[in-house]
Length: 492
Image 1 (cartoon, rainbow, N blue to C red):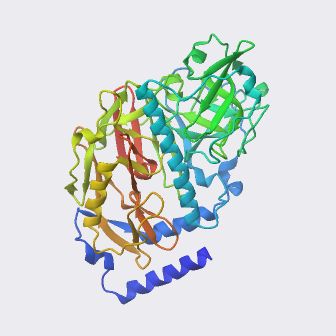
Image 2: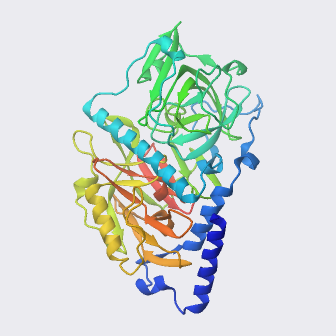
Image 3: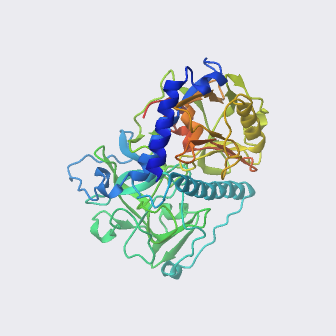
């Protein structure tokens, strides 16, 4: 039925091109640098494509490889390391009957993640934690999850152990602890690859309770002098198991010995399809910190695309023509990457937003973080209202759709159009650099019938989050050594 509706839409679009002398959208806005074009047909074609992808038939789903002992080992090295990066929905078979139900599911996951991030920052500012210590015997007791679905939208394929067993890991700049599901499982969710067996790796080593890595965990316990870990996420999901070290292989680019990671034997409600989580946060236990990376970068392809890109360490440099912004840190919490944002422009005109709205205050509250696991950008309510109102004012002649859908309060009906000219939206960063967003990064399809929504959402929290919808198609470089963020458009 969805395909039939889509073909009907294409017929209407094609007919309208022959019967009209100018596109309806072109009449509504001037053709200049103040506007840009959204390709409606291309976006809707992708809504059909993503539902038809069968991961079980994909060449991406190879399960196990062996790395030769003669391969180079980069221990705490500044040498380049690289991994492929894939959208979640190209690796996990869709269980949704239509594109709208897929979008609503994504937004539900997204809301859970954002609530968790906000709670984590608030607790850090208050100097408290929601995590409680647990007894060693609880390792064999299932933890009930508060949610059936987790967050995280992009996967990388990483090798663990010797010989290396490759597995898909969720990429997460909002987490530090790396972990994988391990045998024997008390409770493990379904993943695409075989569950890791630590006894099969000659380089697997349990960490003792006195190990510095164990001391760095926010929540830990000790059993027979083995370090146990627990990570509980904001949506109620959790992982519990043994904390250990093993060799990690980054595709064909190299491998690193003695990387600390959780060997989870009780994992609830998180990242279905993935074997675990690759933590890229700023804390001591993240992958970036453990390999002492001077920089890392990723480029996120459209989540509705079957294409892949890359996650790179110590290789991509910030170019002279790239947009740049200060990479800021919050003394209250070291996980998140804060970016210096001063405001926005819409249609080439600056949106009036008071400077303190995006600043981290003396208590550690507020600010703007970049997060690859959050989909929709959340803006403090005052900033969101100003941005939305400026956009709505310049789109008065476009046909409005449903008044609100899930997170979105500004939607349009583009069902009769092949392309539409819309106001440009740009980020402005501290230091004066600007990043112009492609139209598809702020007007996204909600269904396969031509409903598009303005892809920002308000939050009552003082913390704003730039999500992956706005990051798509842009290589984001985290220059950790020089405390700089680089944003390079069309570098996937």
